[in-house]
Length: 125
Image (cartoon, rainbow, N blue to C red; front, top):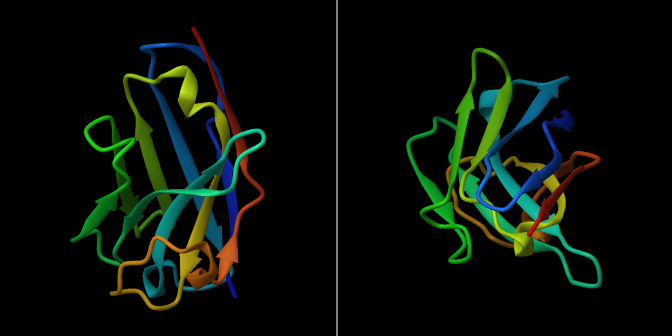
């Protein structure tokens, strides 16, 4: 079992950057692929990005591709989401999630085994 704690959210202006962190504990971090999801007010949870256990493969949703970068440091048991050129429509609670199937891409929240509590990102126009 792994515990996940997100941090780094906040209130920024459009065009600004933020870096979210997801600290893992309780299990071998490199045993998991990691994903980032978000939920905006009144909307369903949305896939943002995925990274393979070794960082060797990544995927992004179309709405963030080219602006967000996912990465991980297995030595620090931490995943990151660098968010650049933020837009008001990026406003949401961001969640990191761990998936035991560490080599296989998935954009479905139901495929993930562990979740963090979320961190709020608010982008003003």
